[in-house]
Image (cartoon, rainbow, N blue to C red; front, side, top):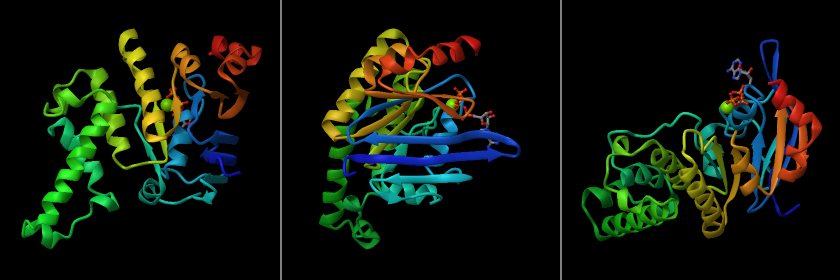
Length: 256
Ligand SMILES: Nc1ncnc2c1ncn2[C@@H]1O[C@H](COP(=O)(O)OP(=O)(O)OP(=O)(O)O)[C@@H](O)[C@H]1O
Ligand SMILES: [Mg+2]
């Protein structure tokens, strides 16, 4: 179907004897905000690792915008349009905020400039530089970090570092953005701001977002649809309201 951006069929992976993920079927529509939840160790991050090419699945397939991307490398998958943030922040600490975003933009075809043009400082070089800075500023505006653009990223408070991680992922111009616990460690005010930012990313960049989160207020306030995992398998799927109120889901959380 044309409006499905990501589809997984019977996705599974085993590590040694352990089935970390098994028979996971996801169908995410364009511009959806989709939640992936479940207790610790349920297999959420492992699914992100499969979708982004860190791991090859043992079973099943992944389709991005109708194209089979199963088992492709991280770089190929990123170029095809999936970008992610990590559960533990990974930034270039001794770079400024804007530099962190510019690094991601450098690989984009629209900002390619020949080495010779750069070395000789030809007009093309300055034009590309200017366009890249404008794009980086635009991304920083959307995540609410425009004013901090010249700060060193290590000097940002934790909540803002998380937002910078999102900006850096957006710099690779994805079709699908994966956020691994974006609200972790944020206070309630920052979490509210983050909800607004994720909606703005969807609206202004026509983005689809798949996010993992333990904060259920965040998930139910933001996500159109939710999949609940437990021990690597799908426990419930549907609207946040349906999925999170499913008796089996409540039992899994209390049990965990
Ligand atoms: N490379 C690996 N080798 C062996 N086991 C792994 C590997 N990666 C993940 N696992 C196991 O797979 C299971 C799922 O882990 P995963 O990190 O996906 O959980 P999660 O749902 O993201 O949990 P959390 O909410 O704590 O982040 C765990 O039992 C974990 O130990
Ligand atoms: Mg995880």
